[in-house]
Length: 373
Image 1 (cartoon, one colour):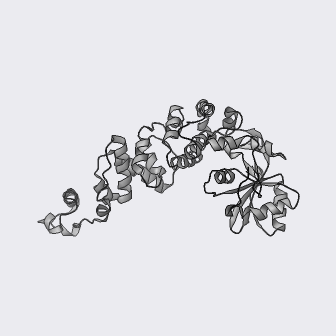
Image 2: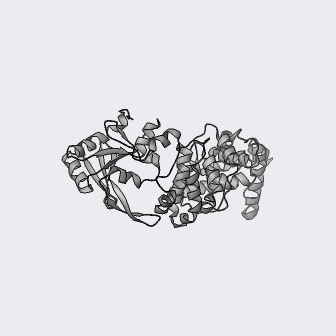
């Protein structure tokens, strides 16, 4: 198998040349190879090498390349070429793991390096001339869009329990939805689900965000629920209506916060303050019966749209999306000054709320004179 030359490879070429000129190997690995073979965009460049980090640094500096020692304890050096970061990692093997982190030792054999990776489609390598190296039969799985753990799934999961969530995410993005999930891997995820409690909430939240950013995560999330995994990371969540929401979204970009709002449940996923606020507002608005135009007036058209979509998916009705932009732009024509000095204090606030409710009920049409007349 030959990986055709493409512009995305160019930043890696001077790094590979610097190592190969010194007698070392330098192989593209992981996501860049997988995505290129699947015709997907390549966003990250990773090289694997038999050279130790000190050698990588020395050879890169001799070649005039900028070096950032990003993960020396794990054998990783980032080399910047033309403004593009290329992560260079020495072949490794795991010495010990605790379900979250691994202690590694350097290796010289690409097959040994491949054996510690998570999925077979991520254990594909290619040199800069395009020759693909497949130590574990990952090409067959990639062609079948079959997400399969490397070796024993239970052992891979015990090395890092985040791989449970990655299994569902990778199926959502790269897997064949019609073929379903790998049965052995799914069983291992179900049996190892208790280990998810060992992970930081930041890691869980980030992985759930990536999963829910897939074009259609519904089949994978349904499998998570059936395996008891969803309840571990998002207690109380209900994924039943997620396929409906995905359908209603149409051409909208995938939005993990909108989809989280539909799932519900209670969990601290360590979202940013902005995302947490938005999640709370969409979830509440979708369930409290407030009409979408009023939501748009109070929170903006985008939030009203998201709440309307979630509500429609939950109750099985078409979403009410008309007039949201106009409602968001509407401005209540009455101010406190218009009611003073006749009213003040609690009475003033009550009257303003009463008039605003009439104005909203009119479809934002009543003028100030009509409201005060």
